[in-house]
Length: 455
Length: 161
Image (cartoon, rainbow over all chains, first blue to last red; front, side, top):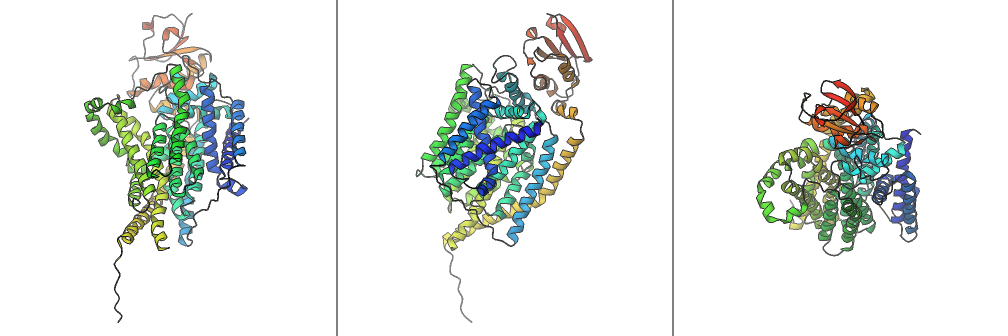
């Protein structure tokens, strides 16, 4: 079977499982809504199948195609069964004012489409070239296929760098190999590009609830134009799907603050779990979103943040047990417990100064992320009085995540200049991408504040 | 002429006006940046795709190793000679000149990426084959059944058992 047909089938499986999940949540109940939500369905399906595959691997199975399909079908069936109890959502999309706004929306969508098409051609011919990708991300995925699961002997899954990273990214890449019919690394960038396209489709359908097209499409085009995001698409780094999962979780959480639709929390939970299983920093991001939601919802609705936090914590427990059972060493880069040791922190106070001075510019870099952070921070600050919940949520997630990154460089045992130089361009990606994804929502809310008053 | 006096704006109204101004400015900035950056970004992505399309496939396979200036012929040789169920070890050293400090660090991980399912072991004494990239094969005190030199200092050796 042609390997392109294979990954097309894999993406159909993702879309199928995701659509069943969205049907279960009441977001999709018609052919029209299934088409509108196809991007979100692919990513929800990918997150669910990736989580299932990770759990099968941790349980000692090889996660071969029939096992993944069987559990995926069970999950899809359970979602469809839930559809009988869950009422259909009434989703209205923000209208475009017409006139020049139509041209602005069309222009933004056109730029996004042309750019994604160019990236698709690049991904088609591309091979993974980034150090982390060929030194451990893809070899881990290859080892899953060749050695039938998480092999712990020499040359197996935990013999690579960062052996304590959760297995989601290698698990889904191993599925790409299996559906493609061979371990061909040339197919991986194309599959990651498909996920990137789905990411924009997912953002569009979620944000369109409250963001008019003339703001939405140019903002999504701006996200796609961020130079470091352009490099990230198709790179096969786990930072690529991590940034997309966190961005979608943040957007769903922000929309929940405004719309109070519990379906959005369920979608956010799916992406928080995927983020948690993608990289070690995924869990702190999931907990950050949950805590900020609890704080900004002002105690009115603590159940939803609790669901997010519990889902992320429960998802990581099996992996932590597997690490302990197999005596896998934790990353030597840092130990987050050191953040609670005042004497340790005081001894290395010079590293705090260095990380503030050297790492912070990566996050605000025009040549990497254009204006993603400044725009989100300015809009978040502007909304503090008129839309306090979303204003504080945007400011809080951005600033705490930024502080968390700086703190990691502070407590790390690695040489700080080298550590920042070799990682900050990637660690800044998650924050920059969720800021860029939030920008259209924040801008629309800022413009709506006045209109609602007049109305 | 009618005496028209402007009513003072309330604090709340001024505040909402400011919020709207920030929102409007943000959207304006987005539009300007998209209009400014889009042509260059599309051109860069297009030329990146063209360059990759023009490159032979076997050359694309080694872009990762070439970024660390590793002589990739050793991997092609190793893939041809080492059986898929065999083990191998990688040794590095100063018997070959390198252009970047990362070159020697890149050899073992790239070998793992390229040569799987052959298992890499950190212990040369436990390996069936040794890939030497500037390393000292004699210092390992192993007997070799076969040695293939790619270039002086870069060798593949089969350990005699």
